Amino acid sequence: MAILGKLLRNRRAGETHLVWHEPSLAGPETLRLVSPEFADGAAMSAEHAGRRVGGQDRSPALIWGELPSDTAQLLLFLEDVDVPVSKPFVHCVAVVSPALTPEGLPAGALSARAPGAGVTLLRGQVGSGYRGPGPIKGHGPHRYVFEVFALGSALSDTVDGTPLTRLSPRSVPAAVAPGAVLARGRLTGTYER
Image (cartoon, rainbow, N blue to C red; front, side, top):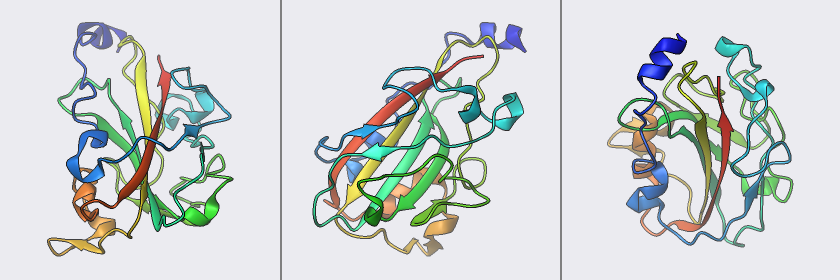
């Protein structure tokens, strides 16, 4: 497997297609997003990695700064921008109640088996719930971008007749009303095998 990683070393999705760049998710970058488990740009521990690579698939704790007072919901995405395909791989999508602030999300709150209070899991690219890092061995470090959007209005229940919980992850931004993003922030962790 390390040979495949080395062969694909220069192929990466890049940041161009992050949901961060979706017009419906544009907004002021005023939301501070941190984790007590890793600094921005630093390595994530093995416990946060996927089970397939020996990790525990345990989502890290996330803490956000003060939200705008009229925040109705938070939308969270986790994407791998270094996967060797054309677009970042969506590891997790969730809708979070703003009532969780200022504590944010505790570690493990994005678990598919037992999501934390105030967390509604939507579909990622492989089911719902947190899927930890599992990059190809030898491919080099991968960046995992946590993106949080404070929304002034709740997401639409459906998009073109499809319920929100059944949407593909790339279709979720269409459920955001124009101008609904009040603030947004991001945090990047890395992982390498």
